[in-house]
Image (cartoon, rainbow, N blue to C red; front, side, top):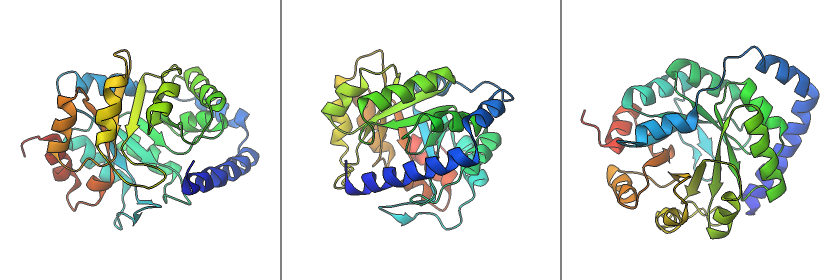
Length: 264
């Protein structure tokens, strides 16, 4: 685990411990019982990818590597821009100290767009799975670089209990082998090396063919042009997660259409 990721996870464990005292699991479960069922995140992505491109568009204000990404941040306006431009799903950063995200960003984005939402955060405790469901998420992220196999299995099982989809993120062949032992349909291949922060699209091109056909590959990080997506599609990958490039653009909807190759 990289030093930055280790610090993020340490802070997250402290954060979760505090949250448990403020809002016990029983309170979360009571809230969940009042909610409508989650929307199928993986199914929505598959439907769009069947004859086109399944894009998970990310709402992210800041990051440890890039600092502040978008000064005029408005989760509601961004979600609507992504929806209008043809995104299949949304990914919303909710980590506060490292990414300047808020739980409310997810609720606002989902209510505004009507699109299935991934809670993009650092899952280090099954409590967060119930928390994700309570704030309106349809899918959670499990980063295998951040958890061991036992915790990964716990998180996936908790997600199943709450009818949430799971995006299991990998960065190398060893993590991919671990991911394939989990009951998770979505396998995210992150082109960013978490130790060096270097981005290399070859990562997805190398690991993608190793994923069996009963799983859905999601290519993450470093996608800046429609040409990048075309390169991946030629290798059989039709699902993508893009955020930082889009979040930096003045016209997010236009930038999303350009990435998708949609005529304006």
